[in-house]
Length: 354
Image 1 (tube, rainbow, N blue to C red):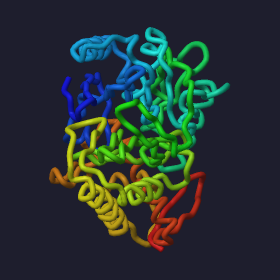
Image 2: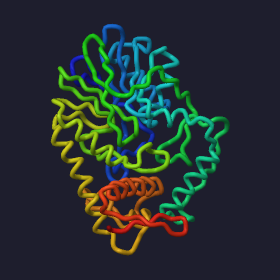
Image 3: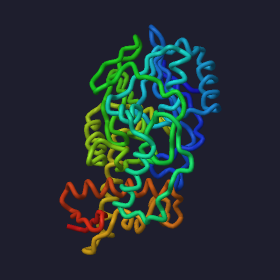
Image 4: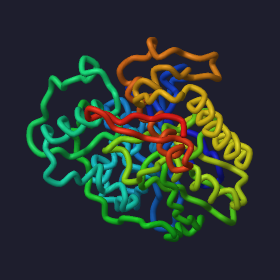
C-alpha cells in the first residue's frame, strides 16, 4: 500500500495469471493496482482485482493498513469488466453494501442473458475457422459449466468461465458523469478500445488521471477483435481515437491499473499511437497479392519486437489467440483505411494489400 497522491492510496493485488497485451511474451503482469480515495461520506474504490483467496487477503491487508474497513467503502467504480479488475467486486459489494458502478457497454460481459456454453463454444469455433485457425488448433473445453453463464471472457469465451458472485451494478455510466468525494472531483471519461466500455477518471484541478488499462507506463494494452471482445467493428480505431481525445487534458500524474504511476502523459500517448502505426506498416509489409487469413498473417509476424522478436512457434495457445485477435484489430483498421482488401473462400476470410 502507498499513498500516491494525498488522499489517494494504491493497493497492489496479486494475479494468479492475467496477461495484458504483449506482457506474457516477455513482461509478466503479476498485479492489479486498485485505488482507495478519501471522501467525506465514505471511500471511493477504483477496480477490485481478481477473485482469488490470496487476492482478497491482500485487499483486506491493504485497507487495514490505510486504516479503513469494508464498511467504509461507499462506492466501487470498475474501469472495465475484465476479471482482473471486476472479479472481487461482487464479494466486496456483498460484504460492505457498497454501490457498484461501471460503463453501460460492459453489460454484455456480465449480463450474457440466455446464452449457453454450447452457443458460445459453437460461435467461437466458427469464428476461429473463419479466420484461418487450423481445425486441430481449435481447442475444446473439458469443463462445461453448470447453470447460467455469469460472465463472458473477451479473449477465451469458450474456455474461461467465472463462477463467483458477479455483483449487480447499481450505476451504469455513459460517460461525462461527475463524481465528487468532498476531496476530489472526478470526471468519467469513456475510453473504448481495450474494452468497449472502458473508462478513465480525471481530476481536473489536481491534474490526475486514473487510467485503468487504457494507458500503461510500459506495456502496450491488448486491443483485440473477436465476436466477444468488442461491440465495435474497429476497436483499434476506437482506441486511437480515445487516446487522441485525451491529448488535450492537463495531466501531471497517471495512476494506471498495472505497473508504476508515471508523469510522461503526452509522450506516452504518442508512443502508443506510434506503436500501432509501426505495427500496421509491419503487417502491410507481410501482405502480398496472394490473399492470406488473419491466422496466416499473425503466424508470420514477429511478436514483442522491442524484445528482439519472438516467433509464432514459441507462443502458447493463449498468446496465439491474443496475437490473432490483435492482428485482426490491425487488419480491420487497415481495411477501413482502404489499404487492405478482403475476400471469402470456403467459409474463410482472406486479406491482401489493396
